[in-house]
Image (tube, rainbow, N blue to C red; front, side):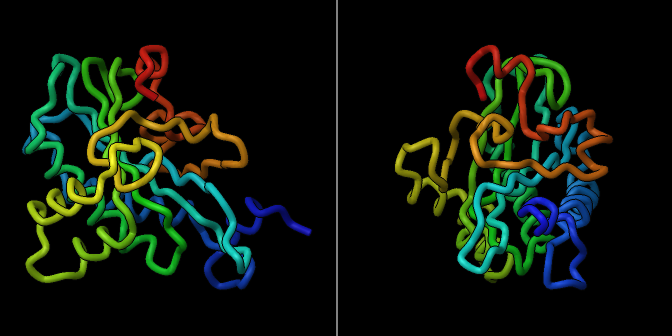
Length: 207
C-alpha cells in the first residue's frame, strides 16, 4: 500500500496521485513571467514548495502552495502597497496551477532585512483562502484593492488560520504530520527539502 506522499507524487493520469511537483513548477514559471524583479524593485521571487498538511475524506491531499519574495537586504519596513501587489500576483500565478486540488490556503511569504529568499532576518506572510483566491482570479472587477479589502475584513488576527493579512511565516517542514514537496523551482532557488524555512528569520522568531 503506497504512502500518502507516494500517491501524491504520481501523475495526473492515474487515480492514485496528483503531480504536485509539476503543478508547483507550472506556478513557479507563471510567477517568474508575471513578476520581473527589476520592475518591482525586489531581489527575487519563486514558488518554493507545496506543503501537504492533511488528507481529505476521499484520501485526496490537502495542500498549501507556497510562494516567496525577497524584498531586499536593506529593507526594514516593507512598502505594504508593494506587498499587496506581489501577494496578488503570487495568488494569480498559483491558483490556476492547482485547479482541482484541495487547497487549504495559498501562502505568500516575504523575506527582508537580509539577503536572498532563504537568508533574511525577517519573514512575514499573507495567507489567502481558496475562496478569496478564486475571486481574485475569476471575478471581474475583483482586483488587488478588492483582494486586500477582503483579506483585511476576514483576518481575525490569528496568524495560524487563513486568511492572514500580515503574520509570521510558518515553517511547514517542522510541523507534525506535514510533508513538503519541492520541484525543480525550489531546487533552483536554493531551497532545502523543507521548501519553506527561513534561515536567519527562524533564529529571529520570524518563522
